[in-house]
Image 1: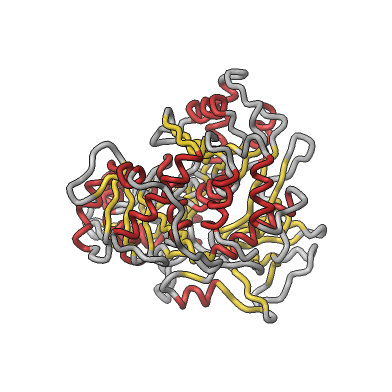
Image 2 (image 1 turned 90 degrees about the vertical axis):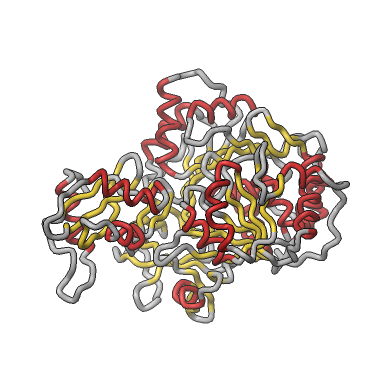
Length: 536
């Protein structure tokens, strides 16, 4: 569907009731009438400070009203969203800002010191916008920019080829920006509506009338960070539907606060990242039966981490009307498969139905027959990203043409069952997925090896009930060195984001390298699993 998110927002803002809440964060509520004007004011402010259509705006923020409000401003102003992981340390943040060519940085005041450390290395940034009560001397205040102006619509002609970026840690190399065109994402959204609702609008006017006819749009709570694809896409979808986005005023996962906001705001849907989120949420309900009124909850969705059937079953006991959707997707390939579970339809862990345009292929790029018992890589055709920003080599490796059809092959391996369903086996590489965060092992290995006591190191993920995969280091000490596990963990934490710090570090009793000098991850993992007493 050749639409543009900015045009959709304009149509929705005209259709939705002005008093309808658009964003809710704690006691702060911004209705649609005000939010629409504030988005336009922000867009003009970015233009006034030198940004031009197609320029990049980086978001270094936790969840809050400002995140999606400023995203809406970017959609309307034809500016390109760039997400920055707020757990990153200054050098990691500098890399994203430099790689993306960002010209505007919107950041939370809690990250002011990190920004101050790197701003002199970022001459291409034309404006720093700080969210918070105070403002650094090198930045402007977000609230001031949002409030200044008459809120009139922007005089811009938009295109389906306008872009947004979603940076992902990926599976190899440093984080890369996945380039999505608005038109491709709108087509995916359109297809999803036809699949789930049974119909989709053929024009913006028809869609606006649909929004106008609904007394209350969807109310969603992204429990996961909106600086990740799962939270970002779910929040964008609801905003583009004239709904309400509720965020929790907390800096960590707080199940009690989340369920309280669900009750208070009559939340109808929630986005999470698998068991790392679902297990604590379920425990809060099990420990406090009947405490929360969850009758408004109709849907819970996840992508990016394992979501076990036992946890889904437990959630359905508390919310019997819930539809649970476990999406099999990646930033590079949205809509590979889905697993939908209700109280009357149980689906086993890691079992998915392939969606339209998805196939499983062998090493020669041939489709694998269902029921053959063979596994292969999942490939997705249809609307796809343009590729990775400033990385044509990685783009060529991931986006492959097979039989005149362009496919995205991000590296997920699966087995095709006789009925055409697939069982997801995992990534066919060394990428570690810990609580929904993708971690590049070599980056952590290099950090470990900068410590004077370490001669060599490998980093891998081992099965873990809480984290999905626990980052584990296996090291070889330099001659005469003493092993201090906590000191090594502290060293990694001082140079990388906290979630990249190994949960455990072990002294290796096996060779870390094969005779050809390449890393022997299999031997290292087998040793770590045995040493930790884990059943792999």
